[in-house]
Amino acid sequence: MVPDVSTGSDSRGLIVYLFGPGRRDEHTDAHIVAAWDMAGAPDPGRDPAATYSLLAKRLDHHVDLRTRELGGKKPPQHVWHCPVRTAPGDRYLTDAEWAEVARRIVHATGIAPEGDEKACRWIAVRHADDHIHLMATTVRADGRRPRTNRDGQRAQAECRKIEAEFGLRRLKSGDLTAPRTPTSAERTKAERQGQTVTARHWLREQAYAVAAVHNEADYFTVLQSLGIKVKTRLGPETGDVIGYSLAAPGDTNAAGEPVWYGGSKLAPDLSINRLRERLPGQDMADLPRHVADPADPWPHTTTAIHTARTVLDSDDDAAAQGHLAAFGDALYNIASATTGPHQAELQAAAMAFNRARRSVTRADHQAATALRKAAKELAYASNEPGGLAIALLFATVHLARAAAKWHEQRGHEQQAAAAEEALRHLQAGYQQAAAPVLADLARRAPRAATARRYEQDVRAALPDHANRILADSTWTALTTTLAQAETAGHNPRRLLAEMGTQRELDSAEHPAEVLNWRITAQPNRRTQAAHSRSTTSGTSAMSTTPRPPATPVATRPEERSRHR
Image 1 (spheres, rainbow, N blue to C red):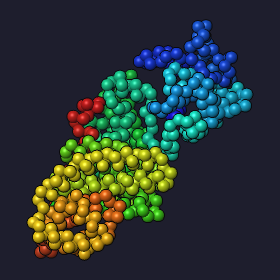
Image 2 (cartoon, rainbow, N blue to C red):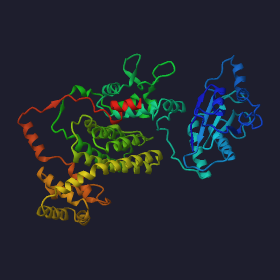
Image 3 (tube, rainbow, N blue to C red):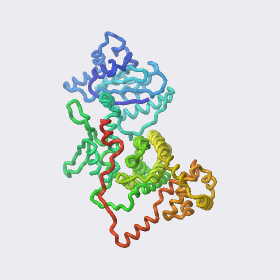
Image 4 (cartoon, helix red, strand yellow):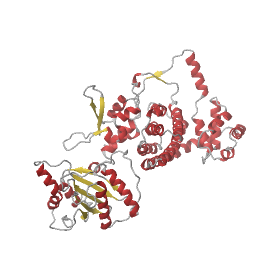
């Protein structure tokens, strides 16, 4: 059951909407199911003599009295509105049940506490099977305003109780860290323009997708390159940026002016201060970037994600929350740097994880510097090395699963559900990407004598897991990976022993598959040694100025034309 509290100043206008046919003729049999006084509340839906103006006058009675006291000035935002909707699949509620829901919510929110004879006047209108609209004028009979602080949160808490008592679907409790829900006006505008999402939602996704850049200047530059209007707010004394607002291409109001959304109004962690906690202060665009191997970002990010998994198992919640925020940024860059049919699943995972990246736990962003730095390098990666990309994707699956568990253990219901959704997308993307790579590795398996030697290495290095590894359907692919690692300068037996000390092997359904991607992510020792010799002898290291971050999947020009 979902309540959505808002305020306004036009009583009659809201009444016209509630009892009218709806903007798309979706309202049927509009009528009052509960009110401050059923006898004193005229019902335009059932009584032909009850006009909209008459109902508005009755509701505004206390407001009008207060207005005269104020010398003709109406109290600001004196109309309180709260639609309450059951979840899809819930049973039909009778008018009597909806009336009870309405009375409990106006009591819980402070609009009309039970037994308070001087409470605000209110009505509950039903014009569809699955929801009602609560409307009140927020001036009491004694002229005071009601105590409605945290009314949305209190309405949510009461709905959780109602769900349990009425046998309805139990929705996840929030913690006030979720982004703002688009208003009904924003949703209607998007539908009218043929858009699949609202401007607020679209801007939020673009802001997250480009947040994994090197610095604040890059953030605004990339947003503008996507056609998004950027307006910064400067401090009066220092002239420094103290806030910013974004407007989607083509999104204007009735006067033809851009519709602006402040960063914090898109999501709590998109405010300028929260962004700066995650972005380095030094302008890295002016620094030369060492490029020893264009494939470096892939194993570096994989290693950082494995580290994040370890942090989630520690007692440092602030560091864990910092790594989850960094992982949210990393998912966008992984999706952007990846090609193939699984890219859509990775993009969906990044969007789903947005709700899991923040909670009431304050993040220690400095603790996750390695993950954030490695992930940012993916925006500058010049290629996608197949095996390394799959190894990274495999690591994201395990971190998403750990994130869901971490949130669940701390009672973060919405975040746990979001992490689970991201996990499903990552698993689907991994399966799509890994299947052909594993098949190719199996086709290129080394000769039988070499495979038998690797079998002896497995039994010596991992005796407790050897039988399961050798019986795994991906064992043949692992022999190819071991051969490649040996060519790169690794000792197979020592490498297996090292990889076996890490997580997941005990519970893994396919332990050979786990080892395969762990080993794939290991650096090429021969290349490292050659580079070290070159550096020692004084050879100049190749450097380059970072090119602009890769355009996120959801914001490429062809996508922009479809969404805006």
